Image 1 (tube, rainbow, N blue to C red):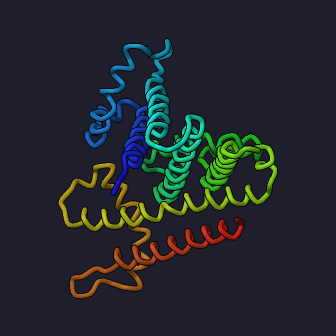
Image 2 (cartoon, rainbow, N blue to C red):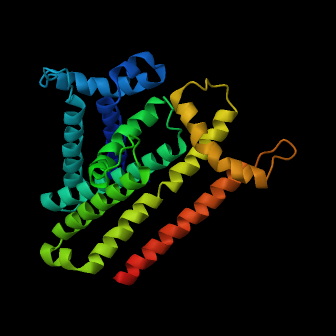
Image 3 (cartoon, one colour):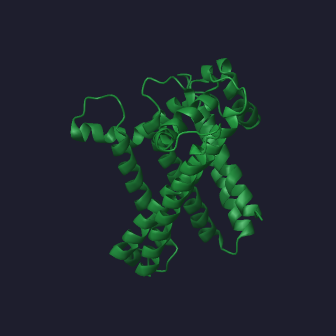
Length: 283
C-alpha cells in the first residue's frame, strides 16, 4: 500500500520535472506541439498564481517555474515533518536526501536517453534533457580545452555523480552527532558512492516499463510524430534489435521484449544486490 509520504514524493517528483520542462523548453514548443499541452494544463494553474507576484525580467526571462520548484521543495519538507517521526531539522535532511536520490535517478535516465537519441533529433524532450545535463559538463570544457559544442555524456555523468556523492555524504553526515568526523571517514565516502550507484542502477525499472510501453504502442494506431511515442521507439529499438537477431519472431509471436525485459531485470537486480551487500559489509 502506498503511504501518504510516498504519494507526496511521487507527485512532487513529477511536478518538479514538469516545472523544469517549463523552465528550459522553448515556450513556442508548448504552443505548437499538441503532445506537450497536457504539461501546460498541469502546471499553468500554479504558475498563473505565481505570475501575480513574480513578473518576468526586463529581458523577458520567466523564472516563475524555478520559484514553483522551490515552493514544491518547501511543501515536500513540510509533509515529511508532519508525517514522519522526526524533528524539523531531520525532516529537512530526509526530504533533501529523497529529492537528491530522485534527481540522480532522473539524471542517469537522461544520460541513457541522450545516448540513444541521435544528436540531430528535434524531439523537444531530448532537447530539454540536453539542456538539463549541459551545466554538469560545460565547466569541464575550459579545463580540457574542448572545442566540440556537443555535450560529452560521459563527462556529464561523472560530474553529476561526483556532485551527488558529495551532497549525499554531506546530508548523511549532518544526521549524525559528529558530522566532521563522519566526513573524514573514508568508509562513509565508499558508502556514499555505493548509495549513488544503487540509485542510478534503479533506472533499469524505467527501461523495462519503456519496453512494455513499446509493446502496447505497437498494438495501437498512434501518430509516430507524437514526441513521447517517437521517443519510446527510439529508446527501445536499439535494445530489442540485438535480441531480435538471436531470437527472431516465430509463428507471429515476438518474444523479444519479454526476453529483453528479463535480461535487464536480472542484471539490474543483481547489481543492486551487489551494491547492497557491499554496503552491509562496510557496516
